[in-house]
Length: 193
Image 1 (cartoon, helix red, strand yellow):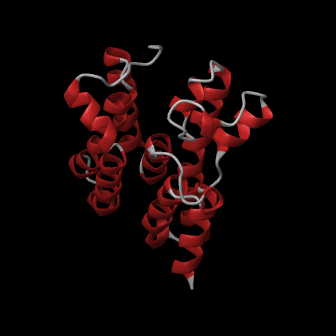
Image 2 (cartoon, one colour):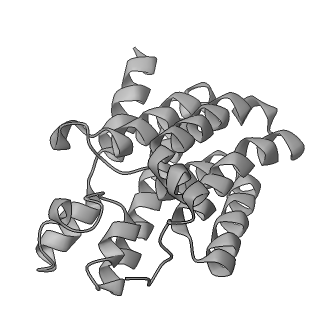
């Protein structure tokens, strides 16, 4: 029963589409009809509303963090990876949006901080560092996702490697169109029209 609770709790928390909610409440239109149609912070930024994009980023990050911390506090350590995977799945495949959500980069950051803060720090440094250097959101996000299981292994949190490796693979699959554009040299940079 605890496994079902962990999965359901993680999924429901992860499935809250903050980007869509905030853009509608903020009068920025229907996010599904803007840019890529994605519900994440990068697409919210395309509305020209930096505050809404920052709020989306923080709330999407909070989803991963809250799901992991709640599972640990309510159910115990054995259930945190299940809640983490479910939160990621909820963000990427929310039932409320016909299973078409975001790509999970910010939610994965929250998951990493929830599992073990040193992993979260590595994730954040890679993500924000590459974003600052390249201004390519997809490249920074994929790199951070790949860094997470490596950091978990290197820092002695080996028990978290399976979940983080699964998430990293999913992030790469969800970014497959971005990978094609990166190879072709056509992937847009943040702020680029």
